Image 1: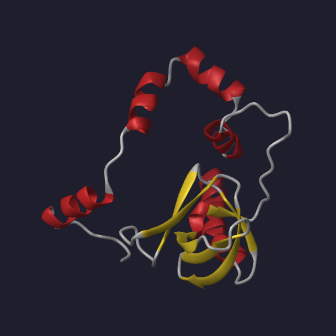
Image 2: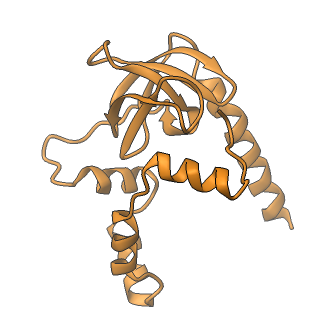
Length: 157
């Protein structure tokens, strides 16, 4: 029971602290493999540009769980993203690194070769299914139509 209480407390702190880390004018880094910056808050807003894992951004403004950011490398790239896609930790790939962007992203989330070997040895993960799932993509207009037809929540607009 004590572990559950501690885990709950940590989760709550993480949810509260992430938007607090993203302060106007602050520096953040992209924490996802790819990041599409939107014209406004909401998943179905048009895309204004994209960034990749580790790219540095400057926070322009905050609106709830959304942050308006501008690329530090190319100031013409700016837009809105969920604060969950950002991290305050600087992400640096070593000069001798030979890992792909997706491997670096997984490592940033605590997934490494040792953990992968444990999953393989225990047979807990079918990598071909994971690869096939990652290859699937649904265009946003089709997803939007599905949600509307099914009378499902559109989330933030």
